[in-house]
Length: 289
Image (cartoon, rainbow, N blue to C red; front, side):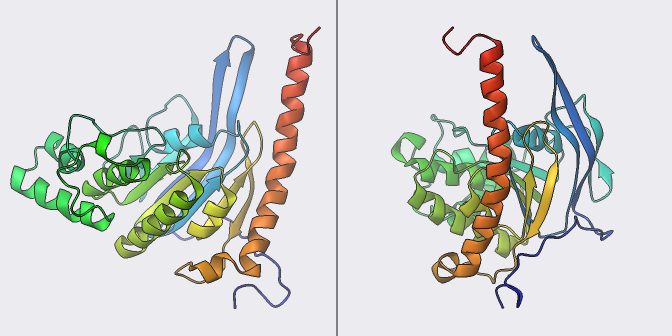
């Protein structure tokens, strides 16, 4: 069954199992600006089980990327605790790999040299790093492009290079911050399929930050919906759809119900954000007065 007999979408609490791969507890982050203190995220807690795919979605300004950078060990000065298998994260962690939205390939390096780069930094022998790089290049579907330079690749192919480079270090946890945002819809869907195949094959714990509802439902086991600033947990939604998420599943009525439900939550929060922006404009005289 794709949904329960009543056709309702299940909403679940965060994982309670002690075998958590990743845990964030009470994460709160404040920023000081010229306009005063802004709370980006407020008391956000989440658990991700080993091998689980969790998507985090919310309106612009909800602190998704702040949460991503805190979990990845790139931001400090926050309240709360992030842990990997019970070990506190206090900076970049060997078990966590990160893929960003921005273009991150080195234009002067070939595909295989780009993918092998973190292994080179880690002083892995040349033979081993090239072997591992070629393995992950093949895994992301770029076999035959090893000697090409980024300028010779499409945007989707360059993003696959970035994913392969992160995977080559074999992190237990993969964090992705809107990695497909700059791509067209068709490429997004195809690359999403590829990422999901890899995640299932490697049984890798994955956390995806996205603003695309269809993408979140297509890929995730669970979705964390965040509120508008300050970013808080609005709800966790379990995606009870069979895998693989074929075109038949993506076009199904059950898939559409998940998209509609999450859009209802996001529309409410996005409306709050728009009202907040309009208020700020009026207060700053930005209404043309």
